[in-house]
View (tube, rainbow, N blue to C red):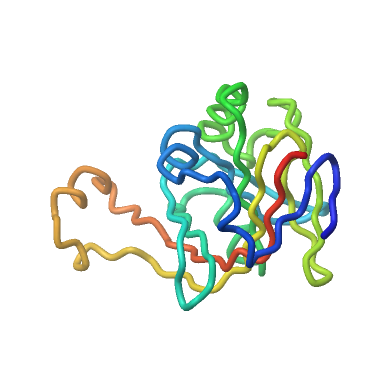
Length: 179
């Protein structure tokens, strides 16, 4: 296993050894979903997502609205990262969720340090300040559709502008935790 920037790699088949409560990590602490490389990347804060097993593989699913700048990067990329942070970074994550990378340099504005991880010769962006990073290989993308809502209350509550999320399911190919 390798390490970089104070992170230790956890093999994809050893993810069950991680201390990972998805309800806390995703819903309470939030995370950054990031795509792109050193030549260009963007990140956004998310608090909706899923971690589990799909197609016999460890996966992470994130959702992105069509108007988000990060969507342009994740659509072009083969890989994306999910970066989790300690509570101390809530202000930085709040900034990344409320400002567009089209209009500002999120790393400069928040003090977060981009780091570049290589997977199968492809570079992907994560952050030095994260305490856990999942490197995901994009496996499936699908737009949510209004006709698929069984509970139409969710459609009415979350999609009044009809800007339905796209789901991105990624196979977790590497994980890194702070040493």
